[in-house]
Image 1 (cartoon, one colour):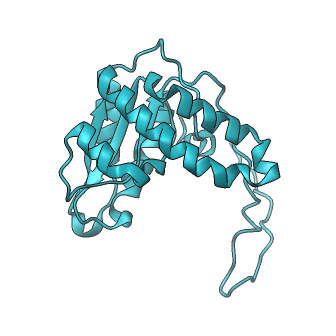
Image 2: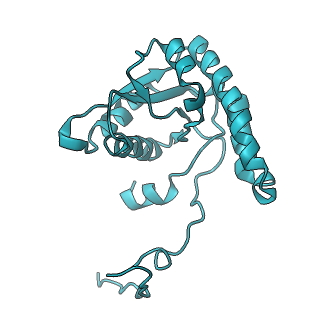
Length: 203
């Protein structure tokens, strides 16, 4: 799959098929892709904790549901967001969190986010190339100590995200984005430039 198509069509997939397992080799492949991302000084601080067993997933789901119930209040206070498909899909994820075939936690000791999140993005793009859906969640941070206790993570290790993974029940597609010319400035703040039409190349 073309890398630009992968980037265009990678989006949060919160409705995952609980009946289709992810081959272990594909989990190795997406984590290997994650390890190819840059990190400060090439320190490679991230450790990727893969959760596939039912009991720890169930325990994580209980924690996640409590965190989401609190975070949801802020989202639902906006009347537009309260009626949105995004909020409905986030509710679905919370309700079915334990059904995700795999959950991955990127963890590190004393690492800047800039050394962690490029790997997370690589992982999600690699998963998309294999038709595996992912979504990046961080609401668990409010009860991170409980997450660490479930998974035996040391106190001095930070969990940067929970990433449920599975084959999506919905269809791939492009999420709405603002035009690139609207969000790009040239040489000084708010100095826009219209993007020229692409010139077809001769075959």
